[in-house]
Length: 387
Image 1 (spheres, rainbow, N blue to C red):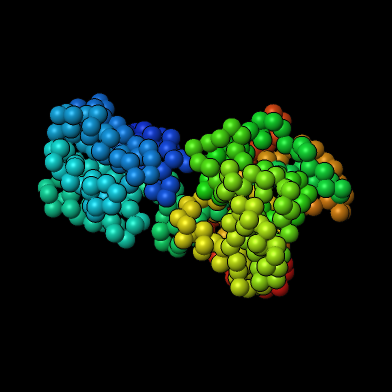
Image 2 (tube, one colour):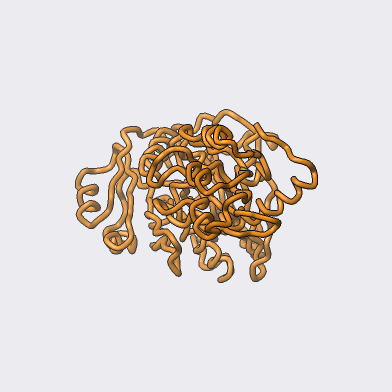
């Protein structure tokens, strides 16, 4: 599909595409369920217009760049991270805007994973006589839109697993004390993650132990729904989650064993309820992911505890990992480890991160990366274990 230009031309296009990618990344948490997109209009070796998709339902990156460039768009090269749309949704087709503006060339990072667009935007531009190049920094552009692609192709959100642990791999001491394993700078970074996702997911045991608020402080571009995996509807009415449910949404995921009286009390207090008809661990989690996709939640942050994180890994649901490792050693066979569940049988089956990033944060090590999806394994028999 890609038309590779000369090496010299390609190096120059990569330079412009990197700038477009940086523009796009500024919209993290602001445009979902749409993808992040960045665009440059380049003419005679200089940028005459630039844009990014800033909010869901707002102008696309190409339109913003065209408005900034004005008449200079004629004869310019459009460098855009994602294939321009060719259908009418909340906004008019970007392909038509580019054609009308007289752009002579369009350089695209990757094709749109949306079946309504995939390849059709390129076809429309070429049919109008524009020179189109596809695949410049394609891998980076695909990574940028991966959460959007997963949602639109599978109906499920991008799952980010996050935890803080000691050097010996524990989430808390044997008494349950976990305040604070990580440094203030690490906690600040964690709050930034919270501020850009659609939901923050924890198990009921975490709530009972910590009475957590699960809010981003300070607030980010998105207000995440707090999701509690609580099969028997044990969430206390006096908990901080329930007491703030009218201000920040709370979704309680319950199973068939939950008592109707408890469900009614939580609903009366302002909580939303999602019911699973299955007591099976895997079916419960799979069904909840489908519900999240139905709500068009693009990215969710799973914060634990160990059993919930274990379920996510056992079901191969995790797409991205953020871990804060503190230089503390607490020991103890009864101290909870970071990831529970069944786990893998052999090291060769272990989940690995692709190009993991390491950052020092006030003595902590912050490790992040995406799961290597080139490895495939069948989930073990994990159904009977309670979530």
